[in-house]
Structures are given as structure tokens and as C-alpha cells.
Length: 168
Image (cartoon, rainbow, N blue to C red; front, side, top):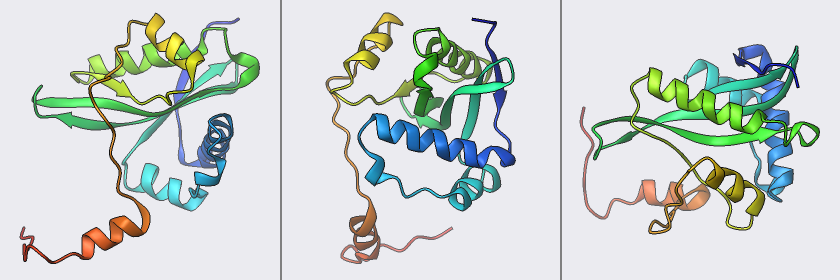
């Protein structure tokens, strides 16, 4: 393997970002969940600046990616980095690209003064769990993830039971 290089994604990379998202969803057996489009990714990543993407490169080829954004810890009193997606193409796995991407994200977190780097992993994904534990990552077993999405999100947003009004 040659030395690993990284680059931040640019707007013209949106089709490649979407391809990596689909490839990851297929690996996770969640391809039916993907509703992202190139237009949505362009809007939310590049126009609204709500996420960032870095690519791991072998020479001039993108072989993996990490999509991440800042979150905030009230306990730490500062931002952290949340890794939404990490994906390395199958033929490049086991060559250090995943570890290099996580090391790069850790370096970005430190450079930006963040207090932590965190992510979720599917319970059945033992190869990834083993990989993360090899890096000394700690499973947050005492926490349960909750989600409201789709129609449920819209219904909750329309609820006026408390009579609360948002003001600026």
C-alpha cells in the first residue's frame, strides 16, 4: 500500500458521495432506507454546510470516505465530532484505510478543540465492532438510541398540546 492521503470533498464529488452511501447501505442491508439524492446532498453538505466528507485516497483514487458533523456535549461544554458514515471499498479493506480515516478524524477533532469523536455501529456488525475495540473505542452500552423520523416527526412538530410558542 502506498501512503494514504486524504482530501475534503468538493461539490463535484456529490455523485461519488452518494455512491459510497449506497454501497454502505448495501453492506448494512439497509439499501431500502436510502432516500438521499444528489440534490439533497449538495444542499445539506455544501450549501448549508451541515456535514463534511473526507476521502481516503490511494494515489488518485478515492477508496473510502467518512461523513461527519459537529455535535455538542453540554457535559464537556464543547463540540465533538459525530461520524455518521465510514466506508472503505471491499477490495481495500484490511489495508489500513479505515484506521487511517479514524485517525484523521481524531486529528481534526483535536485540531478543532473538540472533546470527543463518536459514532454508532450496528449490533450485528462484529467485524466493525472488533475493529473499533482494537482502537480502544468504548461501547456506550448504557445508552439507547431513540429516533423520530418521517411522518412521526411531522406529526410531533404539528402537536400544539402544550401551547408553546417559539420566539427569537
